[in-house]
Image (cartoon, rainbow, N blue to C red; front, top):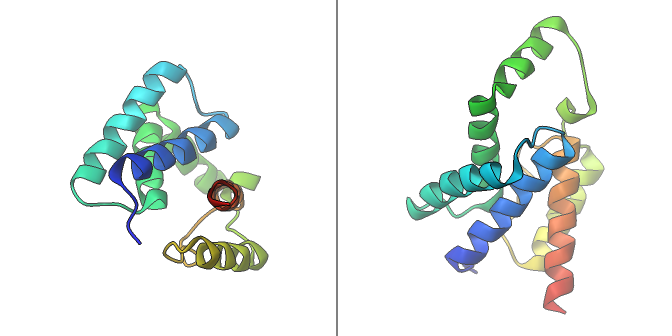
Amino acid sequence: MSEPLPWIIEHSMRIARDYLEHSGELDEPAGANRFLLSIIDSLARKGEHRTIMLANRAIEAYRHRNGFARKADKTLHTGEDSMNDKTMTDQQRDEIKRLCHEADVPDKSGELLTQEGAEHFIRDLKKQLAERK
C-alpha cells in the first residue's frame, strides 16, 4: 500500500518536528519548519518514501546545521548518557511490529530508533489507526 506523497511529507514533518521539540532542540519554529520541509520534500521527490527515514534524515540535517551533532559527539566521548540515546526496548519493537501490521504499513520494527523516537512512532501509528476507524 503506497501513501500519497503529500501524506508522506506531512507525517515525516510531524515526526521530525515533534522529536526535535520534545528533545529541546527546536529553536525558531517557522525557520525550522521551512528547513525540515525542504529536506523532506527533496528526499521524497528523489524517491525516498519511508516516513521514518525521511524524518531521521531531516533531524540529522537539522542537528548538523545547528551544531547538535557536535554535542552528540561530545556525549559519546565523555561517556555522558541520556534517555534520548538509549535504543528502543524489545517491548517497543514488538509494539511497532504489531501496529505496522494493523496499519498495513511496512514493518519498521527493525529500524534503529531511540526509546523516545520509538514512542513518537508508536503514537503516530496509533493515531493513524484511530483516524482510519
